[in-house]
Image: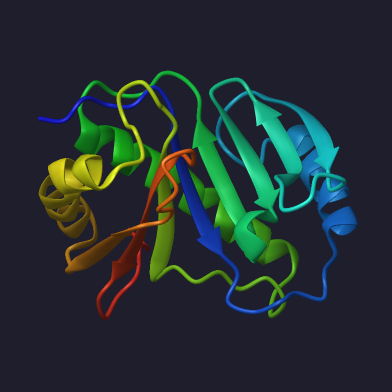
Length: 184
């Protein structure tokens, strides 16, 4: 079984450009802290819109961060689990997918018919450069296991590709559910 990375990120992109602006997300995330909208100890909201192609608006929590992410030219909800991951990769991925989906659905509820996420595709990032270098070899070593795990979680066939070819980038996978979505 593959070693669980130190941190795992899951990003669901929006299907279309929204009318809602990043500035509009800041008070939503602040209200989430007060209302305990998503699971975890929510701490603060930080505005990173000034960073080109960056994290946008970030809701900092104890175990994970939630970002209205503007990276890669794609607006989306990016969930990054920072600690307390289960010891096996399947459980860790299931936990991260569950929490990312919970947050994306909650954000969709804030702006119905404007914020619509594409749940058929996710970017899964392994934020652990020591164990997961962004190389073709790393991808080949993990491809079969990740395909099996993700296909089992969603009960459908999942296709994987590397998100970035540049070895200086972090190791991340584009994951597409064939004929379905990640709504688990």
